[in-house]
Length: 240
Length: 188
Image 1 (cartoon, chains in turn green, purple):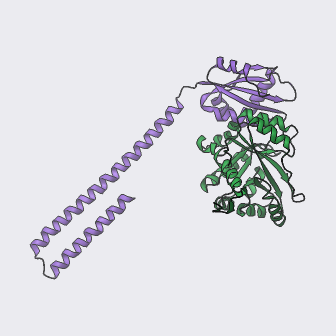
Image 2 (spheres, one colour):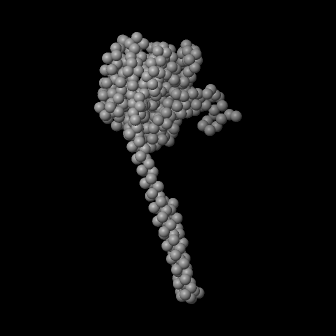
């Protein structure tokens, strides 16, 4: 198994990226060693394309480890199940952006899901102690994309109140937290230290904040690489 | 908690001892003189146990107070720490070229919006150097407020509706080194 290195940008949106090579170069210069390129799928189109060869070549040149992630935007639980069945084996990471409470709870319970992406609105509406408990029990990480977190509304003191509440539940129930950039264009690129500064200004110590771009995302990637290998039979059962 | 449990266990043991002594006296196995002697020994042990229990509790309280005092001392030390300077080298990403005054405006807007007067005063940001050609600059701030500065830089793209982005490249302790790095470091 290849040795993965931190820091990790867990969400770079490849679907909208206009200048993917330049962004990859930027990310490498900023210090990222692993990048997860994300395709967003909706309920209507549950399809995933593979990575282009050019992107793979470029990332190899730069010394970046590149993985593919499917971000499923969903309102319908039945369709989400179908989509998960179809996609799970094709991609390295599966994330869900829930649009209602039912889907949020389902994504906190299903073991095929790796991370649940919450933006500000969803954090306020769906992320409470029950959701945190569910995610903690099933080892599902909470992912916060920095650029998408704020939404279109004006940022107010309430935003930071709800963020603080989120971190309270996350630390209390030991939910792994991942801070990603959610980059779609070059101006939105963030350095690793900028990503962890969000946790630091809300009172979390630096050593804990660092886990959100190093240990937690790497653990998910390693787990999934192992799951996709030929030796893996079931959880806890491997071919010798 | 463990000390309380230990004290209760010893007290129960001594109560059993007294009970046994009384029953022996009632059955006539012990005479009154022996009963008095053994009772005195029992009382003595109970008194010693109680004194030790109280002393241990007192010691725990003293340790706790000491920890609190040292943490308060540390907090005060942090407050009276001499604010040292740090220099952050950043790169501006924008479609149009930004002048020095534009960059200063962006900084004052973002610090005012997110940290207010008090937070801004703690950070004390100042644009020391800015090169319009390369769109790289140096921002001076107080060394304890690194995370606030980094967060403010990250929020620039939100404040300007995604038109401008600031990327931190390096943090140094001297302006001389910062100037050297500005000349050499580039993202593209």
